[in-house]
Length: 117
Image (cartoon, rainbow, N blue to C red; front, side):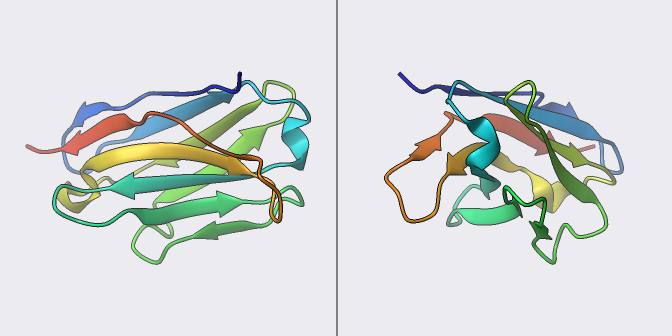
C-alpha cells in the first residue's frame, strides 16, 4: 500500500522559515513527478510547486523566490523549503506524487502551516 507522510509543519512568525518533508513509499520514485499543494481556510486547493522527473521545477508566482521544491530520489523524499513566510501562506500543505498518463497518483494527508505573530 502506497503511503505519503508529510512532516515539518507548524506555527511560525512572519518572516520565518519551515522545511516540509514528504516520505513516499512508492517503487521507482525517481520516475514520479512530485507536487506540493496547499489549501487555505475557505479557499480552493492550489498548486504551490512541482518538480518533474527531469528536474524541471515550477513555483507558483506568489511563492517564487521564497519557496524551493527539491527531491532526494535515494530517500524517496520531497521537500519544500519555505522562507520569508507570510500570513497568507497559512494553509494545509499536501504532498502529491504521480506519473503523468497513468493511474499512479498518490496523496498525503497534509501538514498544517500557520504563519502568525
